[in-house]
Picture 1 (cartoon, helix red, strand yellow):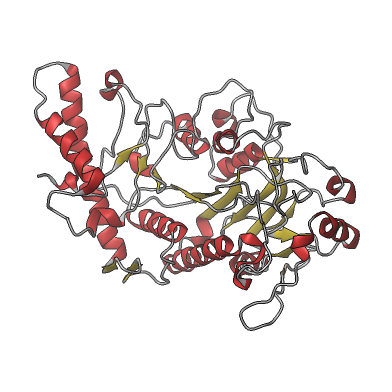
Picture 2: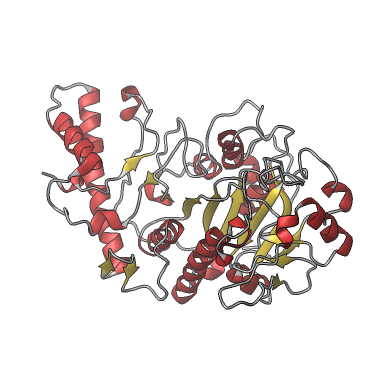
Length: 451
């Protein structure tokens, strides 16, 4: 059995590609020995569930606005205590009237640096009167195009690849496993980014070098059997065999890269002996760990990750909850914060933090008023964060007003278009935003430092 039969096999993002396109598609890396890419790198972390902007960031320096917010959302002011019996204290931001959630210490550290390396974009998102479903709103964010427009389902990172004729599969690493319309993937393009569950799967599974067990192993064994028996002289059998050979090459390259960048891997806690700082053994921790290793060992420039748990329709802060789970999202924000801290420390040690751009966004925000279950329903604007040495940190966007908070229905309108955020990033990569989003009249935000 070939090495490709291990559990953590490389998955092709565009699973719906037809057989007739196989011969034309560049499904895999053509040069597995390519060196890591120098220069700026981008990570998109998507917060699934619709992140309520007023849990991470609060306008505590505006008395009337905060008073209105507490009237609308009494659970935000719940007098919860931490595990040593002391009140939670929100985190201050130098020169700002806003404070961060208690678990967001990494964001505070980066914001308070001089120069600041954390940009907080108030009222960011998709400009639409219909927040729609989670799926529709997520697609809008990840394509960078508002609902209702006639566009393909190409993710914004994918649009960068296509507009600049970049076809190396390792240029984009999607650790979510892939899916149509994510920031890193595409529905029907020539380029196929690399999508996988974890780089660790390639080199540190018990069945390494043997026949895999489980659903993935069964699929791989079946596919290999079909492909190995393909015969004939037509274009399709040749393309299938060629792509399968490239898959073998890619799997081997990923396994080598993880071994080289990780060293001794402990499958019990997800630690790697060669890392400066260990990542938390959580979903987002493992994703950012593997994206970091990809940046160090593979010709990767873009990483895409997702993390869930930001849906607060009900019981956003129920009475009697664990005090360390403040506001219903503390555990999620803590995991995100710890993973980003480890990512930053490793990047600084490797000398690549000054070129890093991390954008963090979510489908939509939440309503101004709590519902009958003390939860929050879908609304428009959310919060957008950018972190990294290449980010011009600070507060961006218009301050919140009492009038906005008194609106009973759709929450607060998005005023910073996510596509403008992407355009600033594209320009910060010394690329042309107009080529990626043709026909779009952008509003430059100035959130990326000149290269």
